[in-house]
Image (cartoon, helix red, strand yellow):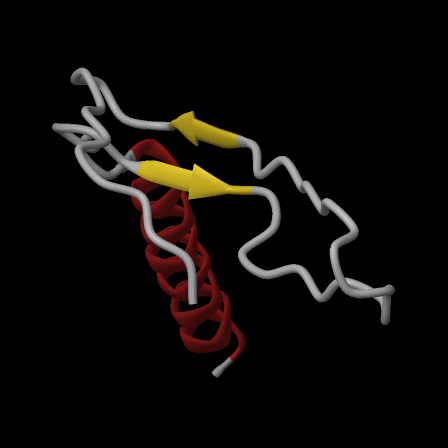
Length: 76
């Protein structure tokens, strides 16, 4: 009875170790192509007097492996 418990425990331990090791050693393939990334995706200006010039800078970066070409920027 005791040896069955020990054998089952060892088998279970080995299965868990294989599962954990297999999970840690697997890595997803790297992203291919451009991946656009924005720190901030919107901005709300405060209330201002008419005619006041407003500007805001959005930071855009490329997290991918290929060149990111931005062809058009619009406002809403």
